[in-house]
Length: 104
Image 1 (cartoon, rainbow, N blue to C red):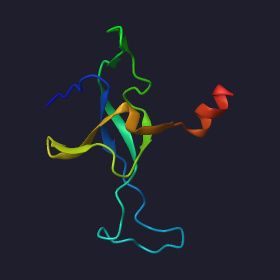
Image 2 (spheres, rainbow, N blue to C red; image 1 turned 90 degrees about the vertical axis):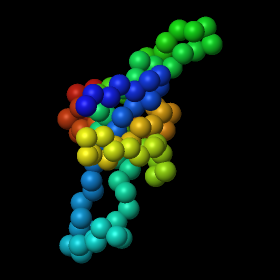
Image 3 (cartoon, rainbow, N blue to C red; image 1 turned 90 degrees about the horizontal axis):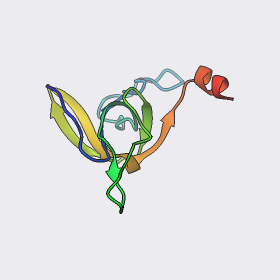
Image 4 (cartoon, one colour; image 1 turned 30 degrees about the vertical axis):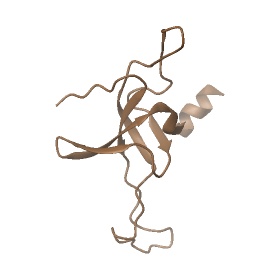
């Protein structure tokens, strides 16, 4: 099923964190917090400003983003748990080390 967010909303899949601590202790599912990192699967066209013009979003499909612990609305789409959130809920876009070096 295809899903197209409206306005300044985005569709995000959580990226699961490692199940072990650095010391090698395995964390059970019940004690693990939900990850605050995700991959953007779909984006809306953008928000409208006071003049009625659409402002494009800063995030795009494929970006890895960080978001707040309680951000977004959880939905189930094709059996997969996803989040719908406004772009303003995103705290930042994660970049790989190679991309950061290339931009500098």
